[in-house]
Length: 152
Image (cartoon, rainbow, N blue to C red; front, side, top):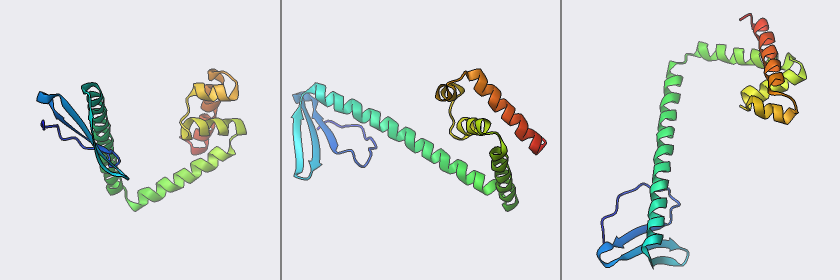
């Protein structure tokens, strides 16, 4: 058997690749409810599985890297937060939600779509059947009202 690179895999990855290149033998091993199986395939199919395995490994690495950074960032944020900061933050959020609810329905809806649903101005304009400029003007007007209330 040729030495294969060690790749991390998702738990649900059902196969293992093996090859003997001198003899042009390419094997895919897998388990299912009927037991263990070995299938001899041609090089093209083996290369396709190998390419897929490389791609999955890269995605797995990317996913785990982001998870790791998120955990670090969350722990740093938590450790830098005092109880007073958290209380002030919660009160500010409640005030902001209350202030948004006081806006006219159109502005309230557009603010929620833009900031909380993270939609673009174009997406909101398409949904509401108006221009992007009208959406931008409405959101800016709502922000001016909110800043007056908060006296920013």
